[in-house]
Image 1 (cartoon, each protein chain N blue to C red):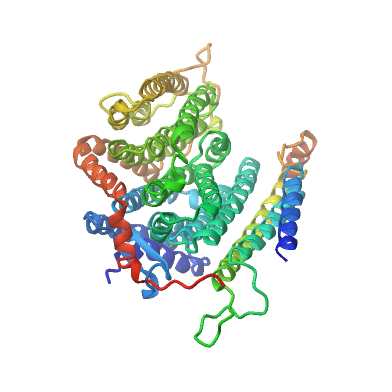
Image 2: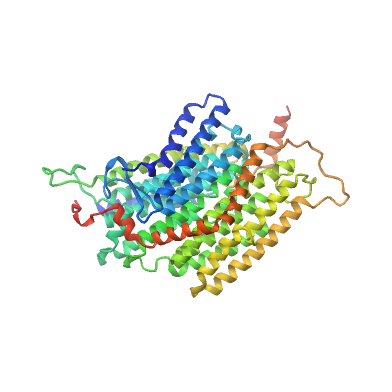
Length: 121
Length: 511
């Protein structure tokens, strides 16, 4: 179980880092999403892995799992979701402004002149 | 329980929600609510600083859940001072933005207030996961403010800035997971207690978590290998937004100071985590920033490099770790934040006054407004650290404070040469902006310029006046920073205020 989780986290991280080093915006965003999945799994594991146990501490319950990492993961998921949505819109805006999805968002000569022509009309 | 510590967070938060609902109303109403919120924020921050100026920090347990189980806000002198600086900066940035910048896009005021929630929360919180949440609020608001006004340059700078900070957040979460997994707590005071009894089998993991945490803070504070984002992002932002950003690198430094002084200093397992290499990184950052100042092509990017240089200077504080140096560093922190913000606004004013070419260092018409020249002169002299301005006092205090250190020759040489380079660059920039004319004497452009904007002028010169007040009141302020530094270097008070009876707390075992 531990080994499986560790391999999954490592794999997600590896793929995420690879994608983040690409030069186009969408792969970079996907890479970030993969990294945030890996981080969430990692946070989850920080409370130790316990199977079939409630996240409640009570006198009757001897076998329980740590609830705090679950709360932390929930917060991290919400924040990560908002960030991914924002950066997607930012990337789309860059695409519409530069006419290219390259990470540097360099304004192309042709696209500039075409937008200028459009503005003039 | 005294509710003052939560007020600097809750006031802008309520204003932000109101402003989101008021999106359909006229801009003047939104400006009114925003201004009211910032005025209230100023009042509650002054109140908080007066209350927090005592030996034990104010502790506020959210929802009455006591530490270490609940989240606490801790207002020590450092946090209260930083909150007051933020309030002053935000008041003038808001006044400047009300001169027309806020009409360039929607939701400016709501996001502006949200940014204040994040910054103040990050200063005040006493829980590292809560610190993460406030960092994210601050960053998300800053992403939106950076893109405010639109344009390809902002999109490009914004994209890189967001990606880098999201990667930083991932590292932050890993550090928090490691801390919780090994120490079983996320409360800063409790971390300090738990760090004293780390079993040898977990020592390396704990040390790793501390190193990762510091890496994230150093990314926010922009120390050299992690600082390439700052000049691009800060020079692309609009003038009032950049002015507010001047405090954001300071958030990273305050976080380093809090974690370092309260939790890591006394812990044998974290011994020497920052000591030897951070000072080198800080000095290299100062040199790098000085080179950047020389190479800047517009005034706003020059100021962005100045901000980087001041961040490098401030990082000397956690690396040398001594009361007098911390006190000097805190004075410099307040001073450089205010002067940096005023300089960003001044760049905006000069850009307005020069029309189409903006603040780029190219030849154009004369700038006829003598007030701008005077303001530029004061700010340039302050930023370069010339007497009698407040930058001189800040740097002098810092240089005197490091006298005992073995690194003294290196620090003095780097800081003084960097100041000389900065002076030369600022003189060159000023003469190009104000004096240089085309050779034939004919002005290049004859465009009509917009009339002087009273609010923008008032905001900028108000902040310059405050920077001058820092000279007059240097003694009381440096006394206050000395008391703040003494409080930071005596973490027992902080820990005792947050967790009075830590021996009595029942801790369950691992499941």
